[in-house]
Image (cartoon, rainbow, N blue to C red; front, side):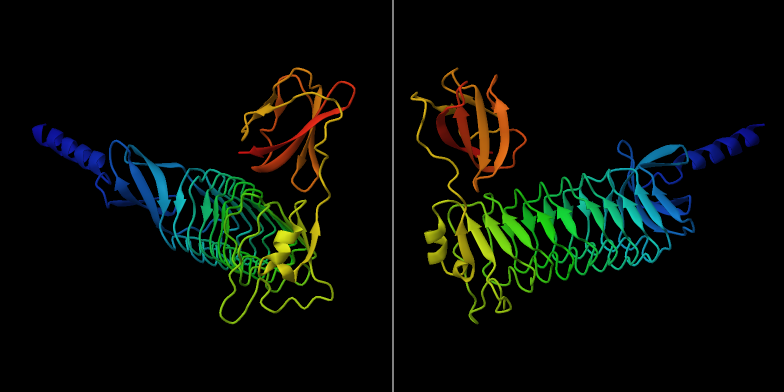
Length: 383
C-alpha cells in the first residue's frame, strides 16, 4: 500500500511539474511552444509547427499540464513555407522576422489584436495574400509585405511607423490610409505601380524614395511634416499631376553631389507637376532650391480678414486640441477651412467649435452672427 501511494505521488509530482521550467517545450494542436516565463506571468513563444490545416488560428493562451500560458511571441521562421490559406492571431502576440515568409497559399491574415507590430520580412513572398488587418499595430518592419503582388486591402489605422521597403512590389495596392503614421521609411512603396492614393495627414518624416515608382497622381504633404529629403522623393512617378503642401515655410531641400533633385532627372513631363501652396507663399517656394522644378500655384485666398459686423472678437485656447471658444456670446455659427481654403466643417455655435475630429495642422475659423455677417477670421493651430 505504501509503495502504491509513493508511486502515485511520484507520478502526480512529475505531471504537475512538466513544462514548468523556462526552456521546456510542448506541442498543442501541431504548434510547438517553448516556456519563456513561469509563475506569475506564465509565458510561451511559438518555435515551430507540424501544421497541416488550411485555416490556422494562433491562440492567445494555451494549456499544458494544468498550467495556462500566455502566447506572447512567435519566433522567426516558425511558419515559413507553410501551406495555410488563412491566419488568425487571437492575442496580442509579437511576430518576429520571416515568421510567415513564403506561405504559398495564404490569402488573409487577421492580426487585429496585435498592438506592437510585425518584424522584418514577416510576410515577404506571400504570392496570394490579399487582405491584412493590423488595425491596432504601431509598426511594420523592413520588407514586411514586400513581394505580395495580390495585396489589395490592409488596415493600418493605428500605425506609427512604416519600415524600409515595407510594400516593395505590392502591385495590386491602389490606395492606402495611414491616419496616425508619423515615420515613412525609405522606398516604402517602391514599385507599387498601381498605388494612386495615399493619405498621410500627420506624417512627420519621409525618407528618400518613399514613393519611388508608384502611380500617385495627387499627394498632400501635411503641416506636421518636419523632414523631407531633397533626393529621389518623387522619382519615377509618371502619373504625378499635383502636389499639395499644407506647411507655409518651404524646406531647404539638399541636393546631392551629382545634382539630383526630388525627381532625380526622371521627371520628363510635358507639363511640370503642379505644386499648390498656401496663400501668400508662392514667392518663398519659388526661391527655395528644389521647389522651383514644380509649376507653383497658390491656393485661393481663404477668407478676408476684414470684419463686416464691427465687434471685437478673440478665440481661445489657441493652439487647440478639442473645442475652440469665443470671447463673446454673439457668435451664432462658424465655418472651418483648411490652409488651402477647403471648407472642412460648418457648425452652429452653442458650446464652442468642435475641432476634435480634425487632423493636426493650421485652420481658419470664420465666425458669423445670426444674420450671417462675418465677425472675424481667426487662424488657429490644431494639435
